[in-house]
Amino acid sequence: MEINLFLYIFFSLVLISILSLIGIFFLFVRNSKIPFDITYVISFSSGILLGNVFIHIFPKISSTSLKAMFFNPFFYVLFGILLYFIIEKFFRWIHCHNGMNGDHKHHLGFMNIVGDGIHNFIDGIAIASAYLVDTNLGILVTISVVLHEIPQEISDFGILIFSGMSLRKALMWNFIGSLSAIFGGVLVIFGKDFILEYSSMFLAIIGGGFLYIALSDLVPEIHKESDTKQSIIQISLIFFGIGVMYFLGLLFSD
Image 1 (cartoon, helix red, strand yellow):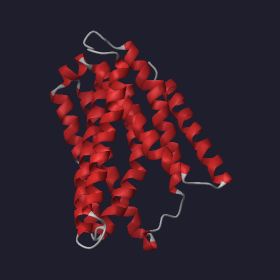
Image 2 (image 1 turned 30 degrees about the vertical axis):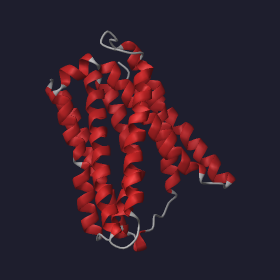
Image 3 (image 1 turned 45 degrees about the vertical axis):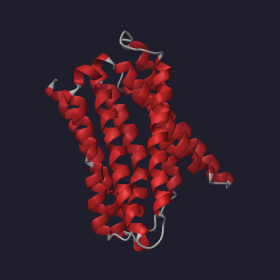
Image 4 (image 1 turned 180 degrees about the vertical axis):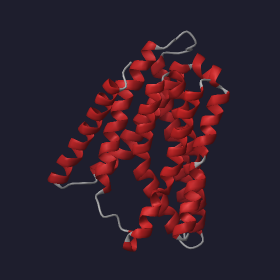
């Protein structure tokens, strides 16, 4: 592997891990209140993810070798959607059965750390796999992951605080959970020959996962807003996010 490609992967994964420290923002905000509408970030992130999937990831599938594919690539898109659904469903089920009161709050915090660790591990695999296929695609996937991680990390930090952790302890555990992204990337580096041989399959799975995150996790949050003005801003930000991915594609085109 070229040293430059390794550095791209390394710095991208470190960036994802450092992003978990966004919770430090709360150390300087009284009562841990967010002084802006987080749905604006969610709307923009939705557009970024959708734009990346349809403008960059899926077209790359058609231009990479399909000789090792056992099924139509859209089968793997479906698999990616179901994979993310099953993972999320599993941890939601555990959260519900642990309850939300008393000592069960501590279980909630622990399960959130585990769930976030698995989520970041998959993000690390996605980022490193994209870089192996194409450096520019790796950069674009990293941007997508960074933007959808912002609201996710804020939410994770809030759950850890709710579970009874101090601000500093919540920051520490959130950061530890995020380090799994690096392990996911290392796994891809060691298995780079396999990843490259089945690159179309992995891109399809990544695209399916991103679609699930955008349409199942982010868009429903936007639907909770009923104010007309706010809704127009959110819709505009979705289109803006798609536009940003389009112009980034032009910027990073070979």
